[in-house]
Image 1: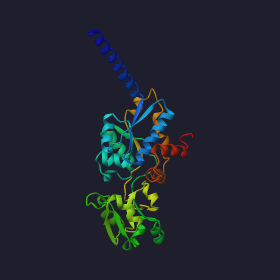
Image 2 (image 1 turned 120 degrees about the vertical axis):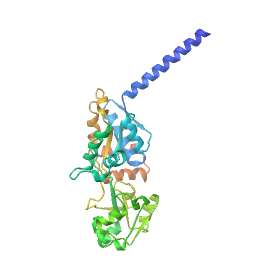
Image 3 (image 1 turned 90 degrees about the horizontal axis):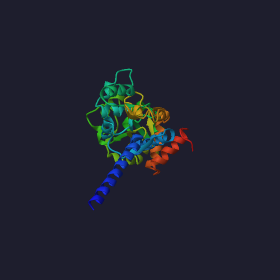
Image 4 (image 1 turned 60 degrees about the horizontal axis):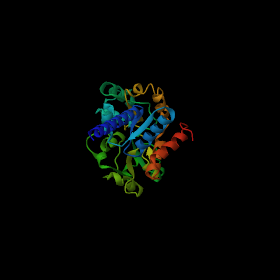
Length: 306
């Protein structure tokens, strides 16, 4: 009986070791991608997975979403390989620098890359094309009534309009806020309302407010037919979409997928603000699965065969 128990223990020990080795082998050839907390990064996580598996011998695993800061920390420590990010987020949210530090004549993207090279173990791939910064938006009928194309066009008619935004946009701290915006453009609105984030779109749709701030790639702007006004003074900083990767990612997979960086950069410059807003609309409003939207748009952009 003792001999049988020993043999059984040995058998299960060997089985466990084989399982662990097999798991490690699979993991060695798997790129770990962080899932997003909302439609935009969810879609781009799926796009990265599709292109990696279609164009290399690697597998890709999408890891459950966590806050971007936790994701950044895990990537910096090496347990996550890839996530969608933004040059402004890398600089301000992750590296704790201010937009005002960007030297004159230097882009947010280049400065974020420079700081990242000095302070952490990650860098951005090439920009994907869209810039998900703050934008000032109005209803289409408002834009047509007052001939609004640029934020500066509001100066002449602001006294007839009500501005509304979520609570944090009215905070006293920070440069990207309501009062600095009004000072920059010389705006004096009829009224300014602080509105719950979840009620902002319904407020502008029903005429409770006339002007608001939104993210340029937010799919809800498509649902509400909002017009984005050109930030002709360059008040809002850039938040260009780009994949964030750990520095040694391509070196680690060089033997299996020497073209990995090239594959991921196939998407560089391919997606406009309107493209990303439309993709998000398809997930948030049409209730399509992110993987289906990702595949269709890769085909649309000529990056994937049907």
